[in-house]
Length: 314
Image (cartoon, rainbow, N blue to C red):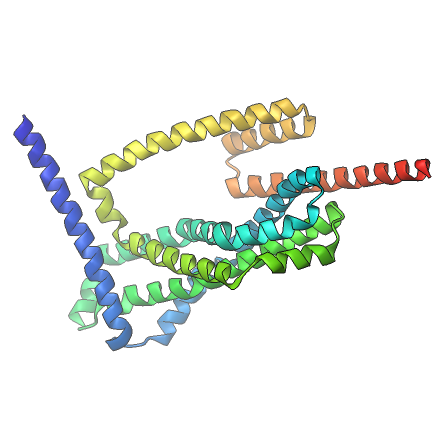
């Protein structure tokens, strides 16, 4: 029995090492093709259009709402110490260092990564890859290299778009909803954002792009490995438990607010997803829009109340 278990673990480990070796060989072939392979401008432009141009709407919308919500939550805390003008610095640094590359990578992994894996898998099943080999065309040079190049070109650009749109939405929220002085807001934002933050963001974007494109081509092989499959199942169970805990706490917090609007939004979004199959992104954007509108109304109401109180004191 122990020998059988050891044999299974050894075979799985050997398959894992084989997959890792295949990835290393692929990256070496791609790097070699960068210098010696044929440059196919038309294929590269087509992949940039698919990966970069068509991904702009979801990345820009996500970046805008992320910046707006982060600014609102930051200003809620900074108001207690009368440091509202520092909100721009917090959002800008956070977007450049962490949130910008992460949200862009998540959007591209969900939208582009799965499409890459499905496209290459279909080509392999329909023997299009074998046809390229029979015509003496290197599949890595023709299929893989342009997609990795397009990902490495598109990822930093999309990341910068998400960051800049997020900062712009944060500026609009702070100036219109919280009446923050725009000159001080811009001053502190530009003061605390350094060239190092921008370089870190670009490096992360390139790394995420390379990881997404590489895993997309080897996902099926990794999934067939027994060790990876078991690890994925265990991770799935852990993630499910964490998500359940987060949902439970968030729902309890919404109920504790005793705001009828928030409770109705939570119940309505749940019903729309479960019974009508509304896409999660539509629900998230709709709830964010309602929340920002409610925030704007409350902020203006508070400003009017403070102004009336000042007039009465005078």
